[in-house]
Amino acid sequence: MNDQKKRLNDKLIFFQTQILDLNHELNEKQNNYELKENQFYSDLFDIIDNIERKLKKFKKLEHLKKIDLSKSDFFQTIQFIHTQLLRLLSKYEVEQIKCQNNMATMENCKVVEVKKSKKYDDGYILEIVKNGYINTETMHILKKMEVVTVRND
Image (tube, rainbow, N blue to C red):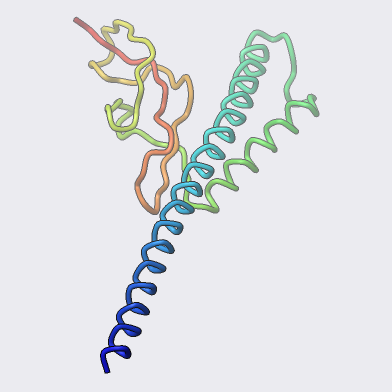
């Protein structure tokens, strides 16, 4: 009887050790997955930022009457790719951050520059330098917006 108890006890210890090892391995894999996912989003956001910067530059040139974007296949293609990337993100519950009443908050904005304005209150967003993104399913901020805001002191 004692031999049987010892064998069962040894098996129990063995299985408990295996469970602990498997839990550790699972946690490690989850952490690695999260790191890779965050890096993927970061790289994708950098690409989208670059596209948006180019689109903004094209629109400034059009405003200055230096180019006609309606005739530019290159511009139309870049704009299409930008739209497709935003749709892809949306498919996975990732959306650009929208600020209520165009006011910056510390939770979702990084202020990169401030300007005085008699027309607007402190915290009003004058310009979005880079868009921010949020996972709408978990409400986790993936990337803060970079903005220029008003500060009147």
